[in-house]
Length: 370
Length: 68
Image 1: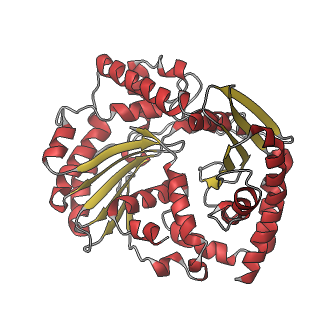
Image 2: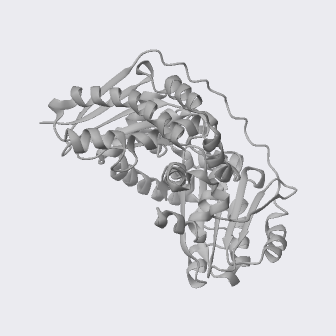
Image 3: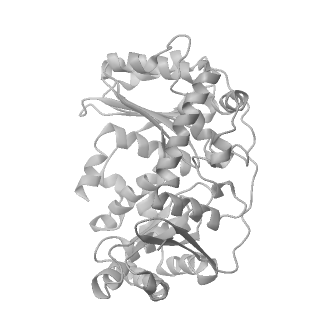
């Protein structure tokens, strides 16, 4: 239903938590969230986080397939398929209605560059229903040409809304195309207009058959439920699903960038916006966290280096945001800002580049003060 | 910040975070290890990472200008 970089949102959340008064202690000492992780024989990874203090439970079923697994000509197919996952199975032709009748809420999905996930929240006593429906959807989904055409129109509309008629959408679609020249991160999660128009029923069935299997999935359940009961039911409903051979990912090495890139787009939008970005290291590496640390010093909140300089002192900008997108192969460090006056564009750029260098030094000073 | 921390106390956001770390970071435990890694990081390492990735020749500048 949604195209999102959920991982960056999650990381933002955690990064906010990280760079403040918590800095001297570990996150695990602050919030203790016990998780039991195990694998079924067919390869399904399960994470259980029971918590009796909560009133309801939530599930999320993620598949390790996103837009980076696509190729030119079928860009956006992961997201298109995510829409079709809301069609029925023989056993549950209208599963959304079954969920609604049983108090399952927030049933939704999202696609990122690295994975696709299906979510919902449920009353504790409906755990078995969730596991039955979700295991059924994993392998027994059926959809027709008519349903594909209907969802295609919905995705085309979504693209118009999120990208073609959204200044930020246009900017970020171009950002990935600018930062990546070979890597599949370069195309948009939602796909190019011409590709959305051309997927066939066979393309979608192949996608489902190739990537939707227990050994390519992670099931997480969190909240009020019994872990003992969940384990038994997960084995009952997911345990019999067959393992598949997942297509091998074609490894693409992004060529090293040796000169700055600049691009200007002109559109009928209300105000101008700009972004300065850099390809970074993969999520979870030590270098990635170092860049995240720098991003916080530069742009987190009103006491950050760039906010003080460009918003408060010089009043060249009204706002600025800095972050690192946590992608599996290459993170993306970005500095994003709306321009109040495009004639000041060069001046703003100069300040940002100067402060970027100073920001690294300040990050080191703050680190030294710990 | 407290709002952020308290959002982890509900099952929906929490399960998303676990999934995200399990897939994108290869292990959900990384969400706990992250802060320890940063605490252990030397200033020299941060500087080196900044100088490796955030340098002018690796910059990408993009502007969307409003048509007049």
